Image (tube, rainbow, N blue to C red; front, top):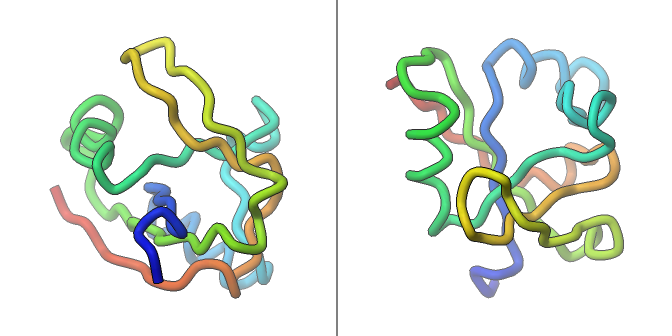
Length: 104
């Protein structure tokens, strides 16, 4: 599968456990801002450094975008001059194709 078929999201292990219990993933930002913040693989290091420095028990979700395309918009960030993928819906667990535990 092509690399651009995937986007990534960082969350906590507790939020990931809650998603498994619900059957879908939704971050607090979906309720607050209307979308889930995601990034490309190339943006991952910067995201971890800017927003998650020193935070333990993180999980990187790899999200297959094929079935979410109509709910994804690449939009500017106020922090850096890049476009980031934002997901405007809950993410079904079937679209999360890999998880990686991160301990910083």
